[in-house]
Image (cartoon, each protein chain N blue to C red):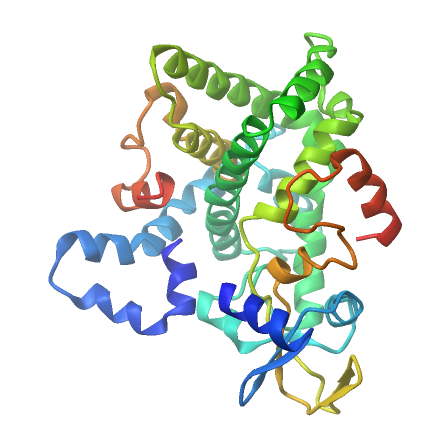
Length: 208
Length: 153
């Protein structure tokens, strides 16, 4: 989280030089995480033939075709997965619960759909539930945890975007927050669950 | 982000927001900019995150090579076969804790989901869970600074 904030507010990184222990710990968390990633490597290589983490398969392949992924790379990617997969998913799931609880009819319908599952249901069974999946898509549309700009650079030769000529090397940012509320794509874009059931169909139509 | 959203509402889908930056909120343009080999590269903003990983790599070939390597561990069939059980087990534990707390009064849903997602992605990436769900606290398996990420405080 702090590394994300620091990219938005670069001057904050100097805070770690402040003589306040709690602030120093906050800003050196990334370094701790990188250190912790070495465990990913030892675990991935530890047990032969056993899938101990997602890097195991990759490292197995590596042995065969030369080392394409170094220990340092595994370390870095493992740390990044933790950052990318923890707070984001937890925040979005929390919004989902909130949005459903605010709408008792939706809550009831969703509970009916989910209760019909067999006790030993698998992932594939969940994928076949239309309302559950529409609720997830709609939550991601309105409350996705990373709705900001995804900045890109225009190619050196420049580009034409919606009729505007943009010179090469210009940053173009495209924030999901706004596109997800585009009324030409989503009727009543600010209303959660205008029609959860129509949403899946809509998403198929525009092929996101 | 909300400010840029307001600018789009006043001035339309293309707004110049600094001398060197244009905000784009048009769906077709979005697709053009983000499609593979569009010629648009990630802006230098991504270099702020530190050494290049799959999220920050700017060079197209370097990125696709790394992505291809990681893809083996992220295919749906591989994940279902090897990891779905672990995810389901942790999800059930998280839901159980939320139910227990709710029956006693209030449940901190964000806290339990954070323990659930952090344990899960920790197990996937490091090969061992942080066991926050079992211990019901951040615990000492994570170096202490990270608890501030985890619980969002």
